[in-house]
Length: 497
Image 1 (cartoon, rainbow, N blue to C red):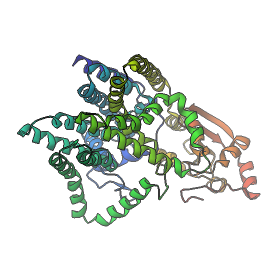
Image 2: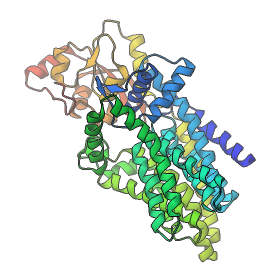
Image 3: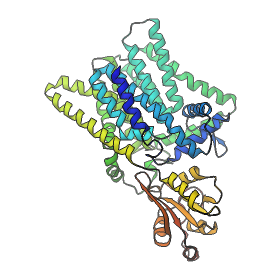
Image 4: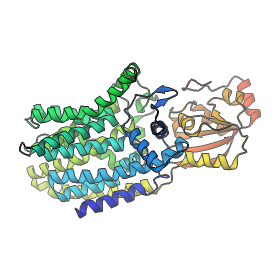
C-alpha cells in the first residue's frame, strides 16, 4: 500500500504544480465552467439560450456540486481556473487506480513503473491540468475495469453480484460524463463474451444493465421536461461529428495544416505520450491472446480504445482530448504485453527492462518540463488590459476563446476583420498566434500579417499553447486607408463581419 501512497504523492505534486499557469485557457474550459455554474444555480445547462445536450452532464454536475460546497462564483474564466483543482484530485486518484489494475494483472514492480509514467505523462498532465471532461470520465472507466477484474475470477456469490452492479454503475458514470466512453466500457465487455469466453454472458448482461441506469435517469429527466427533440437533434450531430461525416472541430476540420508537421512540432513536449498512443493497439492485441481472462479483457479494452483513437485521427473529429483514455488503456495493457513477450522470448528481458527504465526517465523529464513552463497568455493579456488600458478603450477580439473567456466586458467585443475593427471604432486588437495561424479563430490568418506590418504590439506573451498572444495598438489612419482601398480581410468563421 505504501507504493500506492508514494505514487499518489508524486501524481499530486505534478498536478498541483502550476495548476493555474502551466496551461493556457482552452475554450472548452470556459464553456464547461459556465455550464457548471448554471447547474449550481438550479438551471438547465444551455449555450446561447438553447439547452445543451451535445455532452451529458456528469462532469458539469460534479463541478456544480464543488461550486455549491465551496461557494465558488464569478466569471466563467475565473471559475475554470479554480475548478481545475477538481481534475487535479481526480487525476491523482486515476494514477492510484492504474497502479491497482496493473498490480492485479502482472505484479507490483510493473505497476509501480506504469504509475510513475502516468503520474508524469505530459499529455495526461495537460488534460488533468484543465477543466475537461476526460479526467472524471477516464477515472470512471479505469475504476470500472478494476471492479471487473476483481469479479472475473470469483465464484458465484452475493459478493460477485454486488461487484457486477458496482462495476456497471461506475461504467454508467463514465457514460453519463462522456457518452463515447460506451466504446471503452460496454463494447469490450460484449466482445469479451464472444472472444474465447473471456466474459461470462450473464456477467456481461448484469454489468451492462447496471451501466445503463445513470443514462436512463438522465434520459428520463430530459423526456419529463419535454426536451427530447432537442436532445435527439444535438446527439445526431454529435454522432456525425464523431464519425467524421461532419467536421466542425478538431484537427481534420482545419485545411492546410499538415498532421506530420504538427506531430513533429509537438514531439518535444509529448514524445512519450505518442509512444503510448501507438502502443495501445499493439499491446491490446497481444494481451487479448493471453490464456488468462483478466488479461484478455484488458487487452480488448486497450485494442478498441486505440482503434477509436486512430479512427478519430484519420477520419473523425481528431480532438486531442480523445487521446486521454487511449493513454490510460496503453498503460494498463502494455505491462501485460511486455510480460507475455518476455515469457515467450526470455532473451528480451533486459531489452524490456532498459526500454521501461528509459520510458520512465523520459516521462519524468517531460512531465517536469510541462509543469515548469508558464503558459497563461490569455489570462495575462486580460490582466494587462484591465490594468494598463484606459477604461474607455475599445478592444477587438478575434477568436472564439477570446469571446467566451473575456466577454462580457465593457468596450470589448468580437471584431475579427479590418472592416469590423474600423466600423467598431477599435483602438486595440487581441490575437492568439497559433489559433489564428491554423484557422481556429474567427479572424483570417492574413489579419496577423497585416497587424505585424501596420500596428504596434503593446503587450506580448509567448507560450507553447497559443504561440504569441499579442495586444496590438491600431493606427486608425492605416486601418481606414486599408478598408477604403478594399482590403477588409473578412473572418473565416463565426458569422461576424
